[in-house]
Image 1 (spheres, one colour):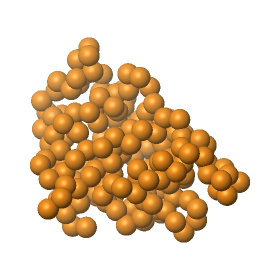
Image 2 (cartoon, one colour):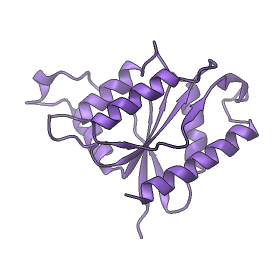
Image 3 (cartoon, one colour):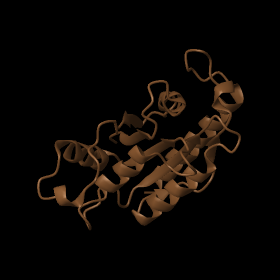
Image 4 (cartoon, helix red, strand yellow):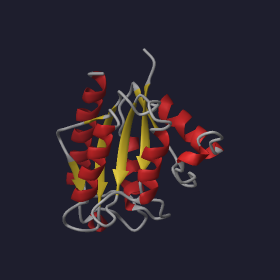
Length: 182
């Protein structure tokens, strides 16, 4: 049996991203039979339907990477009660041209990570709503909201909180079981 590829998409572009720190930890605990592949969303040209006749190289590369994944894990901060513009742009670019979405029919997981106590709840649910429209199947339970993240990481950005590690292991186990249903 060949390995299943989990495309990891981090919505934060910031160099010291807390979402990337959590995503790195999750990638390190992906079980045998699966491989984590980070899909870089930095530098993707903004979606503009006028460009479809001659799409930018960044769009073609993104679409190929998204298409090659068997499932997706999204890590998102919350900006103004929603997902960051860079993440929304990636969702739009890879869903076009209309009727040719490379997202469709695949399972996904969503982890929202925030410095605040509500843990990116708004972004998590906005992303879930968009994925549902794109015919992507988000894991329903457990939901993953990581709040007060600065208290969970050491000064180098490594996850140190054992309770959070245990929760993320439970989440990954549920997610790979979800992938196997497809």
